[in-house]
Amino acid sequence: MMIKRILLLAIFALVASAQAFAQSRWADWPTYERPEPLQLQAAEIARIEVPEARQGAAADADHVYAIVNFAIGKYDRETGERVAAWEGPRGGLIGHLNSCFAEGGQLLCANSNHPEVPMASSVEIFDTETMEHAGTRSLGLMDEGSLTWFDHLGAGWIVGFAHYNDETGEPFKSNAYAGVHTFDKEWRRTGGWRLPPHLIAEMAPQAASGGALGEDGLLYIFGHDKPELYVLAKPDMGPTLLHVATIAVDAEGQAFSFDPEDPRVIWAISRPNGQVRGFRLPEVPLEMEHARRFAK
Image (cartoon, rainbow, N blue to C red; front, side):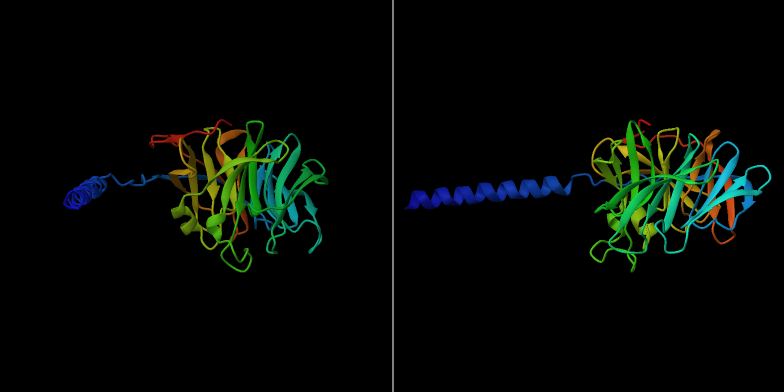
């Protein structure tokens, strides 16, 4: 009996010693500190008065396109003259065009049923010459949220979906569920990342309204109403994108697109002023640990 008691005391002593060692070891364990993003400034290079400047802007070599829910205006880049448009009916089959980009004589646009729930989305295609509707790809109801932007990534897509904290969002999902996902060319999901939590807080109660991959392999996103363009990199581990830079831009969020003629120029909108604006972006060095470029 005495031997058993001595053995138990020895075991308890060993356990206590191991716990003390573990607590001491964990107390000295380093804590991750999020690297501070670079603070940069964009330079404005153009302004065009555009009544449709409510949701976003796109551009090709000769024209800019202003997007508002169920209408798109086409404007001459040099003169600012409105030369054509597509206009749908209020309450029609296309209700919330959010972002577009021009490619091969077409505008490829993100559309959703926002502010309705449950959220449903589609890709809508327009002919840039005639401004006629030229095609559609319905994504239907998606748990990822409401489609706000998409871009090419390899042979597939990189895509932004929104969730909201107000009455336009799903009651069981906050804007923290807004994310960036990858899809193959047939729009089958292949992966994705969450947005950095501090950016989710910055954009609350909304989410990222615009996004596109730059030629530098970094992801650029706009929130809903702040004059800040956030630059994100792919992490080499984990599910969270890395915030590498914030670029001050004199445009209050929403959707934007890169200029096809100059990879450091974007076209965005100033909703309060009814303008499409062009900006030259600074180069963004990638010096943050664990940050990688996307293979566009």
